[in-house]
Length: 68
Image 1 (cartoon, one colour):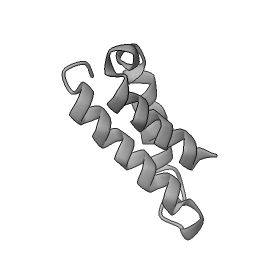
Image 2: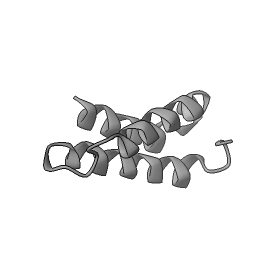
Image 3: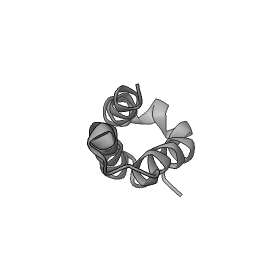
């Protein structure tokens, strides 16, 4: 579930940046929590961590001027 949610956040940032801009701070907090959670580097959590990091990257690329 976390994997899909992180992926969806990244897609929203990329494809609807004007709408998504209002949620940047909350999204970054959630993604950072996934990427830094205990066990984030375990086999079971690798895909969620990868998608969280990818979503953070998309936010930086597509909304870099909106993030605080």
